[in-house]
Image (cartoon, rainbow, N blue to C red; front, side, top):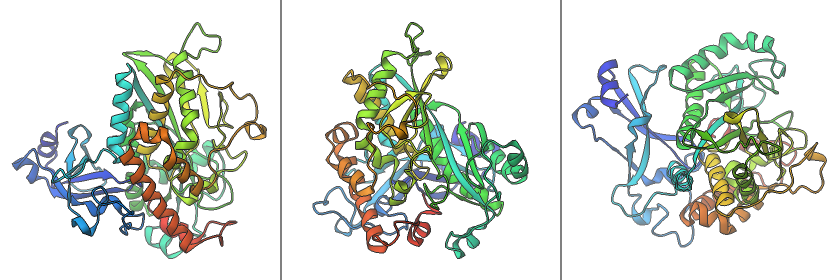
Length: 460
């Protein structure tokens, strides 16, 4: 529905302009709805200070040689322009007379391009695959913990010893879901009223852990949906006196929070990952896509494991997808392929934590598939059986320092993601790692540190 129609039909008072930063945090501003009625081409300016803030909202120092592409006082933190995408406008049902619209970034004075920002990156890679004749579809599975805490009580506890929604972990238990329903259903209904295409939900492995699966959508739209999902959950849960946590590993006990990225490709209305004539029903295209994602996985790990906490999640038999391999319906490795039917034949990427920026998680899959198809790569033999016990499999980087070095030096990353994105994101992550090392160092290897909890529990 066009923005003007939405404003007039629902007598809206305000519109929220929102865009993702590199962390996946929702940044933006609000305007009176009457500004749109007066000028349908309305945009909003925001300081370039925003794009280089860390998770705590503190500006990151500029890198050496960053003049001209890294915001700083040297260029006065010039303005960016938030340009709304009318196709993304929607009512915010838990707020009074408010709508929200996702925006793209422009430099207000056209001093430097902003193609390195997350949404622009996904759209550019999506268009690359379109140029190859393919339409990519994505469906995200998001895991998160829900606590019987307010924002205030969770903060006062330092995000430790919080009361989970449920005292026991009962994965797939309908009894558990039924007991939780009086609190979970209002959240789920508000999400659906907000336009979140929820396909299935269930109780997961941890106490209070939820998993919501989203309906397949084109790449940029799917990234928008997952980004708004995480933003909306925090606002909606707060109104129910609940506190959600998307950290990859908020405690060393039990399972962490993952993000599984299901994706397929189509030509017109025909799925191209499925081949009826093939013995395993998997087409040449899906195998090239798998080969490309495997070949780039170590280079791109930083994009789906963005914090020091992300790497605490990697442990055998915890379904973490940190082993570089693929298989047929095998959850012990990074890439799982599924052939239920032609329309559901897909790749499931299982490496990332729920702390990942959804835009960057989808971007790494798009870039990997493009690399595999353009270079006509062949995948290794599929992994059969327990990948965790297969000593021939290589792991993704197991520390943030290693992941950062591999990413920054990657020729493939620079070629497919762009040199601007690589240098911007690498510096952004190096600042984050330096902050961890300064605050924590090696003193908290056996347990999640207070610093991690205070920094990430209510942000990523």
